[in-house]
Image 1 (cartoon, each protein chain N blue to C red):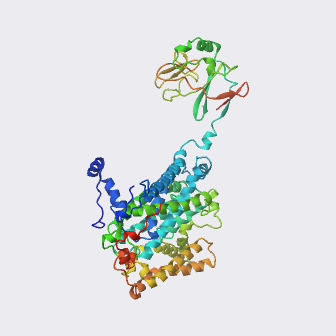
Image 2 (tube, each protein chain N blue to C red; image 1 turned 135 degrees about the vertical axis):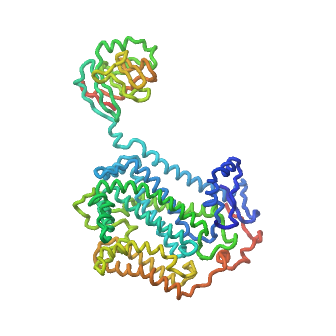
Image 3 (cartoon, each protein chain N blue to C red; image 1 turned 60 degrees about the vertical axis):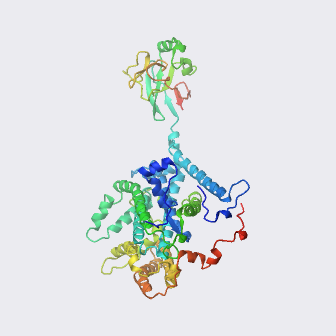
Length: 189
Length: 433
């Protein structure tokens, strides 16, 4: 934004640094307007982030007393499926028998469950490949060749610790933050 | 268009030259609001409100699009979705207050813009189309503002929808079918809300389109000026950029400060508390009034209280619409060859009375429909029409106008050419930083 002087050039008051007063005013004014515009941009962008009522749904309590060993349930947390699975001793043993160093996303079953509740595998039911819901939590669904979960979209196979074993998914099924509030109550989020 | 001495767009960068040969969009901008549009050098601050109105429209569109992401045009959930915006959406309170007060801001600057035109004769030849397109924009604004006010589905929203569509019910024979067609039912309900939302989203873009025509038509003869004297020589003009971009820029800053005061300190000052009560088709609020920017027209509507050949209801509606439609004929009603009110001593007085008259109408429109306000509205309504239909035609015949300056330059320099001649540089102090 060049300043236009219609007067004779000789009138230009050039300061010692070679900066004219008008240049300074120009830059200062446009800068203030720019800062204002960027400030206005913040609410316009931020309004699309999750609103307070959505964030308020970010914690749920689940009663797990009715889930028998070998059974799993699906519930919803943040509008996403959660798998809560009561692992049988055989399934835990199968998960522990695997050499962790051979895994794509190395994690032990102990790292993916809570102390004292080793049989409770709680994960997001969202395939880490592109977000489909894997099969295996509901009665009669295939659990894939490793006995855990199987994603029908692109063929990712998870084991009994919901770790990725085969297929395109990069990571194990995500374990959300949760805590046992009692022996039969779990709070997710 | 414009003047032969307008600067031509000459891109320096090869890429800009390449673009100019294929899509001369930068040229269009340069010729419209850049260095290529010569503007009279003597514009006063009343000439800033057009740009400010454009800014207000831009703000309304931006905040409106964002609000539409959270608003729900369902009669059962619309009210709650507005409360959701206020309480849950990040900075939703700011966006909604900016939008609702932005509407008031838009009308404030537009009214000043219109009164500028009335005083300085901006509607006169060769700018009749500019004036009439401006009135079209004003009518579209009113429709948009009204439908927007219905969307929160509060008590005022509901009864505004009922009353304003009821205006069309006054039309003989086809009135009721038209009202039912507008509402999509016998009273405002889901169909009304959905179509109002659709049109409220559409019309601002129609307004933007008519604004382009408005500016196009303006740039054929070029901007008017406070003397009303035509531009004659290059000495009468300065390029739009940087002179008026800078002036409009600083004035826009001033306007935004005013808007910020409303949004942050008085967000509900111009609203009605009863609109925070959900719409109830079984109970009309005791005192229903439109938003302040409709008050003068509302007063005209209510000024007709007794049947005279036609029913009073129809008179009110006709008068209200006529009060604006009348302005379309203003270029031919006011035949005075002098444009600017500054050179029309009698017109100035009557113009001042008109402003007071409209202010009185506005005041009465915001009051309950009881005496003395009804009687005052009637007198003020009569004067409003008399101003345009009787006073202006007579004035243009009998008024003795003041001598006009020969040119804009002369009026700016007050005949002191000698002092304005190239200065003796020894006497000029350099600007102090």
